[in-house]
Image (cartoon, rainbow, N blue to C red; front, side):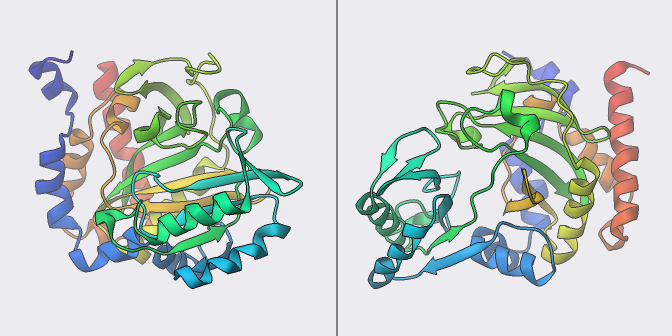
Length: 321
């Protein structure tokens, strides 16, 4: 248990304060659909030439489910709900034998299974608020080789949280057996903090417990140097210029052929990133606000300089230097 004094000293941000002081004042309601709807997000990313997995096709209505027969030629793909939440409804297919496809976990699926899954997506089973939804099929990312020892049958992703256009905290999310190969903390994935300055992982968190090793592979999750880290930070800063949300998260993956890709955006990023980094968000948020108005209007290069300055101060606080 973390005592009140320790919580205050670490500067941990709680959900109520996050919503009242950062989400509501900084995120205009009209901008939420650009992030909550993954197809709208993709469209904007493509328009501004920002990297994202290729979209194969979209299914809007039940009578279009028959078009799924087109995937019989695909061995690898991902099916997602356009307005899904917390990773629900995402189906990752990583191989095919005969007339059956194989999930990341190794479970086999027939065409009937896939069609049933898509009809559930359309009915809104996985969507925000349970409203009817849209299903889409996209390129299946294959993970970079550096993550293979610490990712159980899936693709890790890197979450970067931005405040007023400034990347301020990040973590690596690692799939587990429990999460069925998905990098989602709500489903049992592991979160490992990332030092923004170096791109090297720190300790981790699993179900709110601090850990140092992956629960399935028993490999240390600290000390991993994230490939393309500077490119990921630069892209994150540029994404703010497109979406203009004051407080949000960006989820990146690193494909073994294509490099960094933007998987999705999140206008309500969770708070376990603080446990993964062993540090609260509040000191960094306050440092940014202390810079006064107009920070968001700076060029992305200048905003990255602010990231380095603020994170450097945080490191000094933690080490006592």
